[in-house]
Amino acid sequence: MRFWDASAVVPMIVAEPATRGVQRLAESDPAMLVWWGTEVECASAIARLEREGLLAELAVTQALDRLKRLAAGWHEVDPGDALREAAVRFLRVHPLRAADALQLAAAFIAAERRPSSLELVTLDDRLAAAARREGFAVIDVSAPG
Image 1 (cartoon, helix red, strand yellow):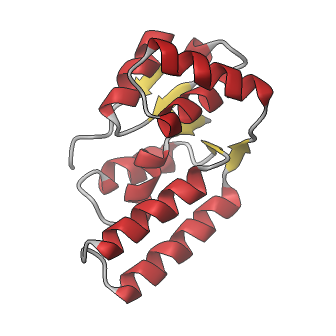
Image 2: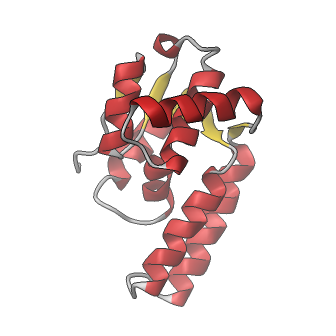
């Protein structure tokens, strides 16, 4: 099981350059572990694409349906005090936005504070750098193909 950041989940529901890579990765290990807020972050990305005119209404509906189906099968790391404390610490030591700090903290808690025990999948360079510094093995799926 790997921890999936929302940035790596979005290409599974909307066609992007990294879609084929994340699909192959998910096929090799279909058990996905995500942060509790991942579904909201993915819906936000879809809504942004719609607002920017990059997704038509039908494509948005299909993407939200794919998101629902994907979310029905993944495992979520719930919010809690330990996760919040880790996120605040990560904000102090890494140049992260709040959502990325929460993602990293969720992975950290899921790994039982042993980052080397869990692979992290992300397309976000800043989050990937922070995760590597914390000791996670970060899976690179950013290259098309």
